[in-house]
Length: 166
Image (cartoon, rainbow, N blue to C red; front, side, top):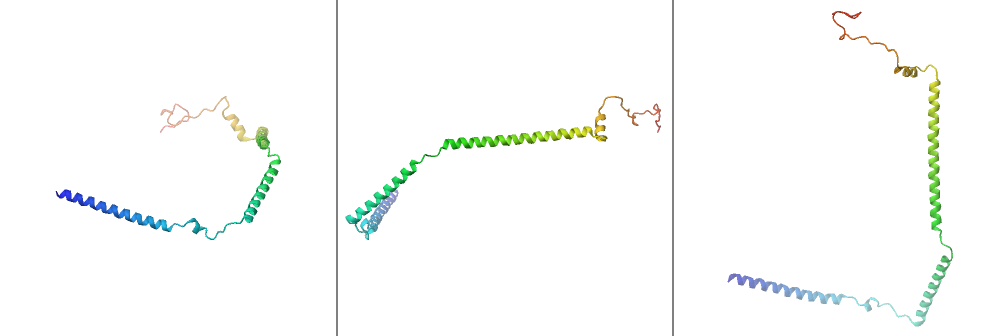
């Protein structure tokens, strides 16, 4: 039974909160509508144009429109840019530049190879180049010097001439 009285009090409290919320909302709504500025209040200082002024404004707008139309007609009378032709010209120019760079690169390689070949010929013709002569005979086939046996290979009985006995 105590549970039912608690439940009734909770429901009653929620009802009171709802009532207060609605009352506050209504009051605030009334305050908002009172604070809204009407169009008449906003445009208080604006006066209505008479017929003569209204006609003058219309004439000025018409003149501006005609001037704009004439300007557009003049600009459209000139032939447009030949975009495709310009693109083709740029492509041709770029291709020509690439070909020129490639020719220069190949020419540099050719000159470098010629210089290397000339240097090789000069080295071959140069007399008394000791390093070059040594390099030629280093791996040449033919009779070679025999190496003397080391001490470990020699026997204790001095089978080889010049061997020492320890």
